[in-house]
Image 1 (cartoon, rainbow, N blue to C red):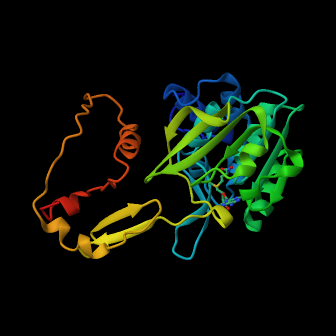
Image 2: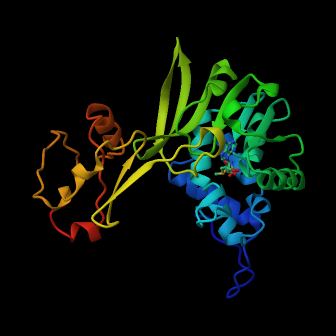
Length: 312
Ligand SMILES: C[S@@+](CC[C@H](N)C(=O)[O-])C[C@H]1O[C@@H](n2cnc3c(N)ncnc32)[C@H](O)[C@@H]1O
């Protein structure tokens, strides 16, 4: 980690935004999040704090989200995404100079990083459903010197046909499905990076065309605010044992919820999957394997508080 600037032997100068950017980039490189030199350079160049005016400098350059807007329940619906999520998606996108890129879900900062990656010969469009977000993004991008980025107000369910085709489409909001417009507006050899929620777990996928379908080149578990508009989707949550156990279903419904009455009070029956996970082996792919192998079985997450109830 780079040392912070010193005024003299006992006074530490307040780190400048450039110092904080450098420290963030060094952290992301040493943790293996950033591997591509042009992405490191983009993070060194774009002033993240300009896109988060309500946050302190420390907060703007922390490895965390900055909340821009919450809904009436206090749930974040617009954020400046965490730097590792942004770096991870940019690594997945493999953007090169001259590309045409569509970003879905605005804020300005990530669009500015993309503008650095595509360079003067490239083209960046960012679209958001919320006028507060697009107004802020437009003014922050202008202030930071990225006036060339197109900022549009629209529901991204229909994509942005006027600037298509895109070499890259990067979705920065949690999606439940891939609307036809996104693949229609993707160049033949293009790449779609999208956080897709599958049975309770969201993964950012890097998708490319292969024949008549899409294949995933990489997948990272991540979290994003939920899609609004025509592509919004509500998970079904069934609460059992008061509200202490929740069963979450991506879609469909329980035809006879009464069958679950008291089910968690019975003696547990353990059925082993036969899959063994080594001590240091990552098992983020296990839920996907279970979801595709045992599609009728919903995952149940146990918190320590629920475990202490016994019988579960
Ligand atoms: C995590 S934020 C985007 C972060 C941003 N890319 C950045 O620079 O950090 C997600 C955004 O997606 C937007 N959004 C949600 N549903 C949308 C939709 N259907 N079409 C376009 N934007 C949408 C929200 O308004 C929110 O501002």
